[in-house]
Length: 565
Image (cartoon, rainbow, N blue to C red; front, side):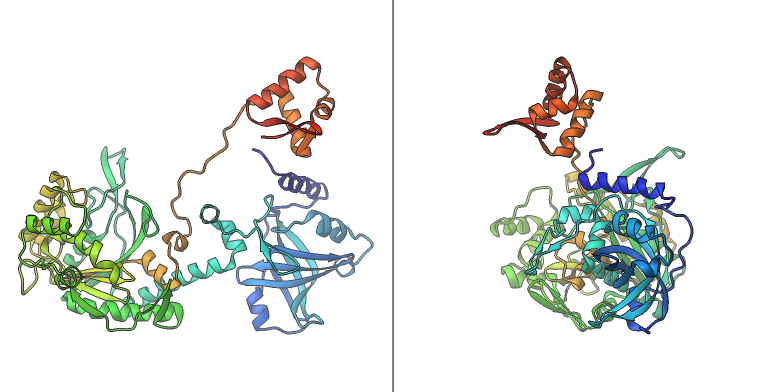
């Protein structure tokens, strides 16, 4: 492992701390009784406090020093005075440990009392401190010059997502997004619980991936010797519970889809699904808009949220537009009563890429996605989808070609999908078989599995039910004004990190490399002298380092120099 100069220095400090008898990673509890937020809110002069956190800045002035301590709630100023910390003759704790062996990023515990500085800043006067954890890697902290210009900000997205732990430390606003995310989940959970519905858990490993059309992740169960699939949706299991006698069930479901990644898709994501007996999709529309209004207020204190250039208002009620009316409005084409071939021809005429594998439902979906979807900025329900697009949805009560389904659109993206659930087992079997035919035809979004156990459950009888799914990651994007899903996931999926190729070095090469690393750039003849190698070994060593692309020799007007590659 190649260490930077600062990392080498910090490891040297670690050794010195141990030599002084200080454990840089103590095991015993530190009795914290306050945090930065509580201190500022309930400030009392000379009150005794015990706090802990990261050392984030220092201004050392001889025997006194002001520093900043960062804990989970923010930052507080702390004041170190040598003679108050070291009451006897031995000043090692301040002169050596604090001044020389501590670094920015170290965790320390502080016992002290509150006071106000001459400029009115609420601070803690340190009476004793304890090293709780030595940081061996410097934090990627931004630097500000005398003019107030900031440099070296930790804002590269890839680095931030890979090192979220560092991102949360140095970019305090990032934490606010995840606090709001938890507020959203809590608000939604409370709304469902207050409505009398029951939170449940269903299997993540499933023998049949059902409830959605998506490519699953596949694994193998050794003991049973069968393939298992990570769930793409939890719908069919929740409906089984409605069959079993629950009036309303919901689940915050971790789902997994082995598909592409972009700004709105991660292979692992969180969906909420809820199913309520004796309801239909009209009731669910009313329920959904009341739910989202409640959640928006809980997260932001208002029904309004800014997303990019748009201000969205989640206040109920929301506009309602049928799928057919939407397509007719934006394209002039009426899909009502049209055959698959007629719709395919119309799509081609609109400049939409379609092929022979696409069934009627897929074709309509492509037209809507290309020509209509992006126009809906304010929350809008798109209703009454063609039957071919909704294999788990109940046939429309007024039109057998349609289903009782809605999707909620916000800023051109779907955030909720809901049905009057299909509870006719014969109709459901036929729909599954139709999907199977589409899959065999080549439609990669059609399901290629039939869940016969789910059909058996329906045959026992499922009451009229309405169900809804909400993409939680996408919803929190809208509520926190984040254009990328990676910003609202603590640890989004990333490509493997590119690692520097490892090379084997012999002892001579390692010794010479160490000299180069410390010097950064060194005269070739000086390097040879410092290496102490014979001419033969020197030639072999320097050639080895350059061949392995560890070091390079460059010629300048001043002579030949060696530096790291």
